[in-house]
Amino acid sequence: MENKKLDITKRIIGKDLIRYFILIYWVLFWLLNIVDKVIGGAHFLFVGKDRFAQIQRFFESLGLGEPIIANIALIITAGLETFAFVFFSGALYHFAKKNIDATRSWFFIGIALTLITYTYFTVGDQVFGDHFELLEHGLFWFIALLSWIIFIRVDKIQLFDNFSIGKKQFIASTIFVVAITAVTTFSIFWHNHTSFVERTQAVNAKQITDNKYKIQFPFLAGSKAFENSIAKFKTDNPTEKITYIYTAPTQLRLGESDGLIIYIQTEKK
Amino acid sequence: MKEKKLIQYLVLIHWTLFSATTVIDKIVPDVYPFWVGADFYTLFIKFFASLGLTDPIFATIALAGISFLEIVAFACFAFSLFNLYKMKDKIAEQWFYRGIGIAILTFSFFSIGDQVFGDRFTLLEHTIFWMILVVSWVIYKYNSLTDERVMKFTMSKDIKIGLLVGAVLTVITSYSIVAFAKDSYASKTKPLQGEEVVEGVYKFDVPFLGDKITLENTIKTFEETHTDLKVNYIYTGPDELNSKKKTHMLLYVFTERQK
Image (cartoon, rainbow over all chains, first blue to last red; front, side, top):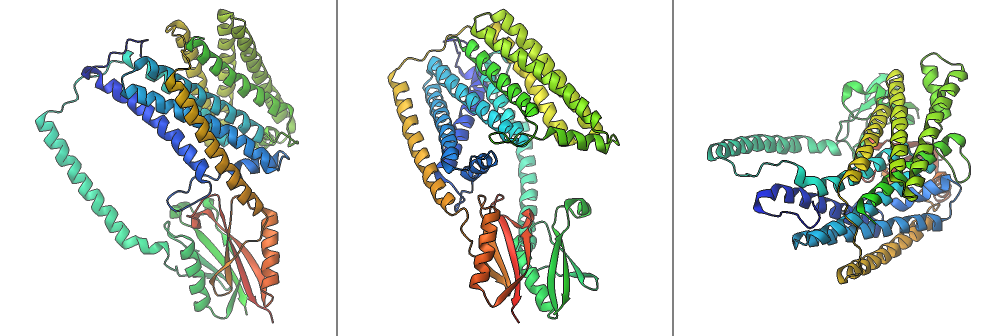
């Protein structure tokens, strides 16, 4: 986007769309981060991430277990995220109103706040020794920086200016999409019809040795399946008492997709 | 201030802090108050041991070599930042280029090591950082060649509204954070209530904040309230069973009647 010279015409609708996508993405990204902090904890229709617990644990590992420290760190984060959200929203508003210069100013501040937020997180990740989060935050920092460059430079990218599709191609692609969608949808619903029961269904135990049994759960199995399987095992083996359950590590489960395998050890009552 | 300059500051501050904390992590090799960091020494010892090189001298030399490169990269970024602040843009760019070069070299060494040690996840991590470094340099450089736009930030009506909305949202979010923290911290060590899911088997849903004290209090309270039961066995529900929230932990307590 050149200074005060953005050529917004129908011809560059593709470039406008890219800018809209970038703006909408960052608005929603920060909005949901704020919602996550406002809600706190897992609720119906929103699980989110328990940031307080995560940050509190991090600070406790430093020997700073007082919740006030985690609260301050989270409030600083929330402030940065909130203002990033506000500035991206303002940029989206100005872009919709075709105030191009204002769009750029608001978007720039949003990006600067995003970069500051991720640099702040990166320092924290190093201090707390969490290299997975360091990678995650490094990537978001990079994506924010790249978003800025693409947003201001998209005019320099050669895009096709005709979005229309020929009649023949439209019909062929529609038939193709409808056919594949029908097959896929049928397959998904059929799988749901036949497999959802596995979520809670008890699984039979297979005897391995005198006092050891194996239960191989399907991938879909949840805690209810585990509980029902234990109940069934106890009913089927009334003279046995469970003394130990061994969870097979993933290295031993390679041939069985990701389904859980447990071994039950028993002794006579 | 020009936009390009501010972007350069943000890029430089990021890499200066990144490399500074990396160096501190090497100077402080273990867990201390105010610093946890990653235990690279142990990691290197294990990596070299997997190659059959169990003598710690190999890991120590490798770690010292890598640390040297990281220190040089940090010095380059710090000098670059200093020169940018002193308006010596050309010298700042030269120092940044040196820093990026050294950092790329460091991540290239890491990637070679990851291949040798067979650690594919770390290989991905290091390659991503390698790429971010290259692109950071391009953005720093590309910004400095063109686009001299000055950042405009006047206290216009819309900016005032934006700041007000931001402040109100921050207050609301902060209130919510503090209220949630108060509730969850207060129940951090409180014993959990179990649910009998199978005859003699009780399930406990341990929250993310719960720790060993929570477990100990839970078992103690359970035994006090179920004097007729004897705890035989405690089973930690693996992640595969936990669809509610991945950070929670499922705990099953197997009991039998006291004789």
